[in-house]
Length: 316
Ligand SMILES: Nc1ncnc2c1ncn2[C@@H]1O[C@H](COP(=O)(O)OP(=O)(O)O)[C@@H](O)[C@H]1O
Ligand SMILES: [Mg+2]
Image 1 (cartoon, rainbow, N blue to C red):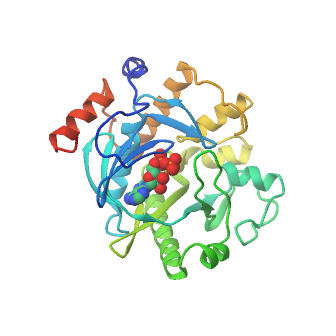
Image 2 (cartoon, helix red, strand yellow; image 1 turned 120 degrees about the vertical axis):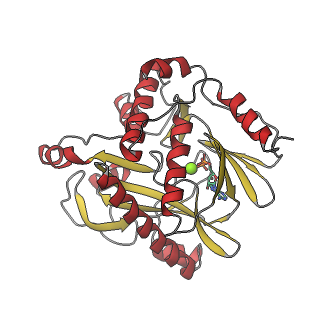
């Protein structure tokens, strides 16, 4: 596997140059081409952390997109979603929704940014108080919702309370439904992860309205939008006060923090060693979570996408 990762280092999808439509949005990770009521959503191999784009990781786009497809399919009977089809390993055709201006984050453990804030004495920013004296990576009795605003590129998403959301951003009925959907999806995600020897620690959902219906959009339960830990090791590591075995994006945040970067200034350049290591982590997660080997599509990603999209006559 390591050989295929090495051979892909110079073949990753960083930018895309395709004639699909003029209405185009380049996100941190994905490239959206808007059609009348659909989006051609291409998952690049870019990796972002602390809201910065850092570089590319071999096979990251394929892994993310395939995991998202797995979850959209698995949960479609619980919560309606935007998935229409996947004409390529890194492409989704989705319903074009009117997006809610908030991200709904569900957490079962105190870790990551929430822990970093809590440790500094920040509490109450979501409209309720977290208990005192929590320890890093401690489990909550039940999942909590810590929503945030959806910031433009270059700005950070900000914590927001439910009250503020329903008073100024989203109709209360719609937001309540989004909360219910988020908890239902999270429950399904936790149950499946648990069966596969993993913990779904926390995750982020985005919602939108399409044809007067609230649907979940973006990506669900991917390693970019979620934290996954190895279940068997949780208690022991927690009791010893050491970090959890992570199979998600926190690995890159950890590497950056070790290099002295926490979101401000210019991020360090990714070395090939860390690109390879992260690719392996993403593959390990794929295998554990889906219970099957990851089959990498080696070679030039842009030309493969071009071939697959021209087959379904999506190129101008
Ligand atoms: N079905 C959908 N309808 C409209 N917008 C969507 C849909 N699914 C995802 N999006 C938006 O597409 C973008 C995906 O690209 P991404 O790289 O995640 O961007 P960002 O840097 O904004 O997070 C996000 O802004 C997300 O909100
Ligand atoms: Mg995003």
